[in-house]
Image (cartoon, rainbow, N blue to C red; front, side, top):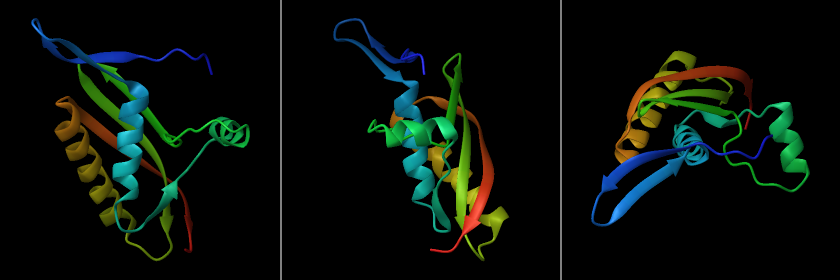
Length: 123
């Protein structure tokens, strides 16, 4: 991890100043929105994020990759679903929830939300 954070201007008011948001915040918003959907057990981590959490550093956005180009957000989510749920229905709900939450909270346009089912598990 290089420690460098990308930030994006989401508001510019000449009298009061600017509002910037980091890609880490976009990732956390996405992860929280996704885990609120019924049928989602957890976000799937990768080896790097699992190692970071074992070292004591909080990484709320594990399983999320965010790209921003020209104030448009693209999100990749790795999800662990509960056993016996309809994968297509839950995935669509995740996409809708993440898109609407990001757009409502940031005012940024969301181009796509890609959902990768990495596992299924029982509660």
